Image (cartoon, rainbow, N blue to C red; front, side, top):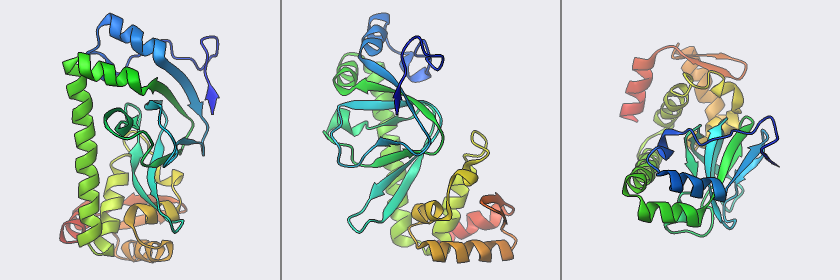
Length: 231
C-alpha cells in the first residue's frame, strides 16, 4: 500500500465520481480535507475482517475481491468491488470494525475517507444520505440473494450463478476470469476446489462453456440461466 501525494504522478486531483455530485462545495471541501488517496498493489488487502475501521474506502480504479473469512481457514467470496464502489460502509452506520476482508485483484486506487465525515454528510445532506443508504440496501439485497442460493441450490446451480455473475463483469473487466484462480471461483460457489474443477469440465463437455487456461468463455447463456433458475 502506498499513500499518494499531490506531487505524485498517480495523484487524482478531484473527486469526479457521480455519487459525490450531490454534495455542496463546502461539503466537497470537507471530503477533500478528510480523505487520503492510496494505491493498493495487486495482492494487498484493502480491508481486513475484524480490524478497526476508522475510514470508508471509495474505489477509484482497479478491482478487488470481497470475502468472508471463516474460523476453519476457509473463505467465501461475496462480490467483486469495482470503481465507484464503497467498502466499509457498515463502519458509518453500525460497526466499528470491518466485517469482511477485501484483496486487490489488480492495482487499485482508493480514497480513504474518515467515517465521521461520511456520517456527518449523511446527517446533513439528504440526497447524498439517500444515495448512500440505497447503495447499502442494494448490497444487503445482493448478499441475501447469495445466502438464499447457498442454502437452496445444488452445486450445478451455484456454479452457474457464479459464472453468470463473473461473466457480467467482462464488459468492464474483460480479463476477470484470468484474475481469479479456480479456488477463487470455488469460494464464490461455496463448494470445494476439486468439485468446482470437475463441474467446469462437465459444463465444457456439455458445450455450456469453453475453458482456455484460466479463462472461461460462456457459450450457452440460456442453458446456464436455466440451470441457475432450477438450482
